[in-house]
Image 1 (tube, rainbow, N blue to C red):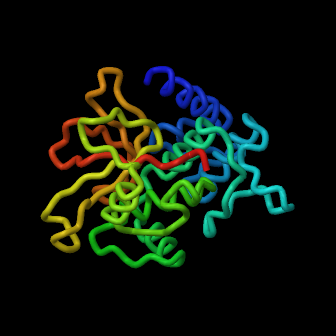
Image 2: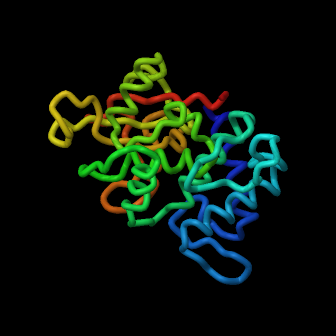
Length: 239
């Protein structure tokens, strides 16, 4: 775990240095030249440029002459890359949204891609959006769009890619899933909240997740024995 975490931290430190800010880690503004920006689309462009400088070709699409920039609306599939680069790309995009309060931007994008509005909140739409914006759509439910955490849990469970609470040490890029019966859209729903695992504390007792919760995106320190935690979905980054 420490070795895996250190690789991702090293990548993100280089990203932060290239961006000229700490926006990769905290809800601070990113910098473009000398001008500060809180615009999330520009933040992503800054992160992408930094990652491309560090790992040439990391953001390249298929070799059929397509544009090498990421389409945040379409989430066009990327050429397969190493898992470390894919996860670093995902976490860089997730962290670039820190402090964003507009949950509708994630839900609207997911709806445009074929999902429906989730009146319980934008948590899962944010998770989907991050995979999509990072060019990793195939890693999230084979490219399907959803705003509902129970659909994420059920999809991965049906493919033996869901790990119940207490049986597994989560990895960066896994999807954190909880279930609060009072928040279910219908009684049989299997999950009510989702986030993206950033890293795990050295003692394994705290899971740090990027989540849209309590009205904005932030890195949340969750207990590994959280009472509503049900487990983790394991995206396949080897697409």
